[in-house]
Length: 109
Image 1 (cartoon, one colour):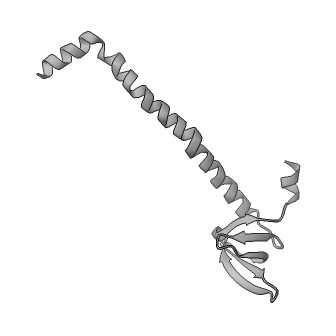
Image 2 (cartoon, rainbow, N blue to C red; image 1 turned 45 degrees about the horizontal axis):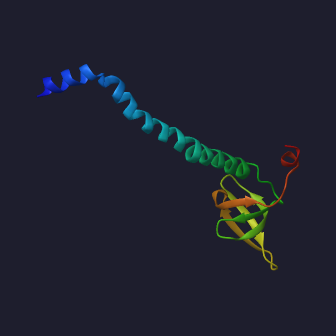
Image 3 (tube, rainbow, N blue to C red; image 1 turned 180 degrees about the vertical axis):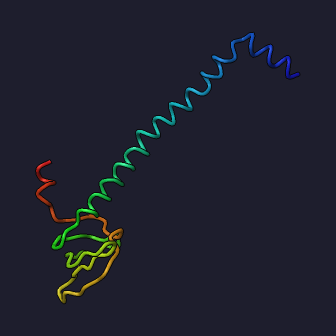
């Protein structure tokens, strides 16, 4: 049975049909890369750059929706000041969703 299958495949040019059957799969993977994976990697790099460039005095928003001004910066933590009573909260650097302060380097680009 196996011999019959091999002879039929070689007689009909099975190598070309096998390539043609994998071509749509390869095209789908390429489309996924350019539409999903690449933009996500670019966004992750931009967020990491934003978090590493935070400075004292920047106004930030956390993923929890807390808005505050950075008072102190350590390696992985920030102390932010929030509200009218100037409450201070220590948060992780990873918890920063966005920085509302525009820096001079960003306006030049």
